[in-house]
Length: 373
Ligand code: 13P
Ligand code: 13P
Ligand code: MG
Ligand code: MG
Image (cartoon, rainbow, N blue to C red; front, side, top):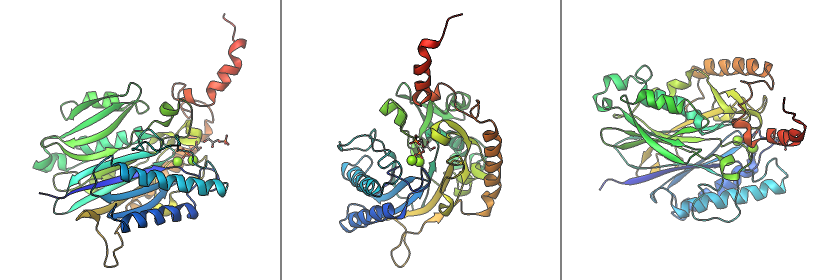
């Protein structure tokens, strides 16, 4: 029987240094301590703790399957402990994404963002995980379309017979909480019709059509829809499987050679250009941004992240590369253009997207002063 290995990427904003800028070192320490202990106890086989901006990211590889209560409890307890530390240190937004107080077996719907993928290991299994700050789940719609459906992006769609059957997308309607599967290339136009509406329709999973091999899983949390009010944005994570009849790592990265606009900058209320960065630059500054994205690559082997001779997981910081300088420069240029527009649409999100922000308070305050013409 082929080995089944699960990759879990669970993230949470538990508090940040200097506004919504970056996860500070004492919170990393707590995450490292708890992950190390869970590994020693055999709950997980390997881990990597990192951040993008103010989001603490727990990458765990184990053999307990998706939505496993013990794995989710480990993440939840780690975030709780880090949030308490953040509170003691009077960090900004301590416990921001922890919407509930008691754990109920799964962190989904409780605030943290989750992407999990159970795979049967192939001879060599390259994985790319993405994590972005100051944006929301729909931010991955465009690159996921490019990676798995655009033959001008992914050469393999044209020249690898193993990919010729195309890919199937699960699209979630986050407003009505229902989903639909759309198959490319046959239903490409319908797919774009839906996922172009990034604030509502979110690609949650992608499978290779010919054998239903799962090859991408994104987080789909909409905190505002859970909380019924503005509580920060749902900075998303994504897991993508690569090579051998799937898009190559290079094909997975090429959509990020150019910056593009995503929703969720400053106060979760503005469009902003996505900037691919190495982990060292994964911190938000200008207008709390620009929105940042990191990509980490690794191999999964025997239920673990492949490690070096010292047992340290080998992680490639894929955007820490001059090949993405152009996208970073574009991001700064687009950012300055958008900020010249201040609070005027389309720099600011549409009124629909602003529903859960403080704008509703302005309307409430003025409601008796509006006169019919
Ligand atoms: P404050 O109103 O606490 O300054 O928060 C604004 C903000 O950063 C929202 O994300
Ligand atoms: P986070 O969701 O990353 O905490 O950002 C909140 C915000 O609105 C910053 O301007
Ligand atoms: Mg924050
Ligand atoms: Mg964040």
